[in-house]
Length: 285
Ligand SMILES: Nc1nc2c(ncn2[C@@H]2O[C@H](COP(=O)(O)OP(=O)(O)OP(=O)(O)O)[C@@H](O)[C@H]2O)c(=O)[nH]1
Ligand SMILES: [Mg+2]
Image 1 (cartoon, rainbow, N blue to C red):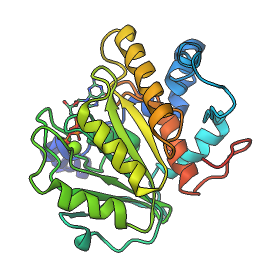
Image 2: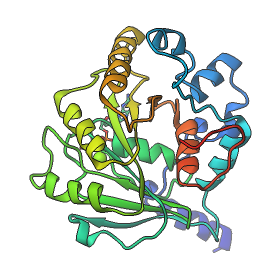
Image 3: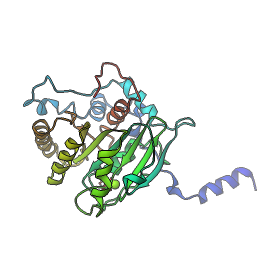
Image 4: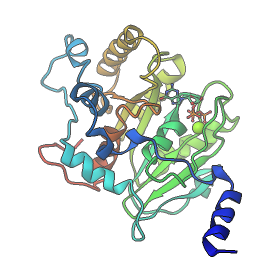
């Protein structure tokens, strides 16, 4: 048999789910072909809503994170694998004591079960399709803290969700991590754009404030449903954050794991807060 034919047969026999294909909007290069307005909405989803959201807010302390394309491209390079920069799953832990001893700056994603934590992380890592980040329609899917290494630059931690079908030992697992992990540089609290802030989120915000280190809010699933609901949830969120928090980054990050809105910006923010890229004209966040 010809070697090429043999290879083709072998490839046909490989399980097709071993590697996802890369979504076309996951890479900045592919966005160049989009109409300018669509590209702007995808890269800076907050900017289109700023006029509405900003009206009740004193602009002076309002800090927008709006890196240019060059900055986003530098961040994107960190989210691509190379032989000297491996992006990989490291370990899962049910207790802080079992968390891997990693020295790089760390960021973690918390939020209600089903809010889209794992999906968001999966879209951040979409340029590494062989990396498995498991998501599910069923709330309570992620049961442990999952650690992903981005070369030597930083670590991303996917947390189990709180609320409905949360692991019974959620508090014992997550609280010691949030209060005790010394290399944790930023906590991202996810809120569903269409559901808005829930009681359980208020407890999580309170906890983030008590931890005493900076955190940011990520609004998920902005592709879903009408913008009216999203807008009113955002106004409420913004008023709440302004009145009740002192550690939260004032700009919520609007994202969709489905159409990649805000994913490029969030990659850049992660790279920035972990000190992995230097951006022009951007103050420390
Ligand atoms: N339309 C839309 N659906 C999303 C988005 N992100 C997540 N989902 C869906 O929401 C459901 C839950 O997603 P997960 O990422 O597993 O949620 P999670 O927060 O990790 O959930 P737990 O692990 O159970 O805490 C899945 O059905 C996803 O497909 C999004 O941006 N847009
Ligand atoms: Mg999950």
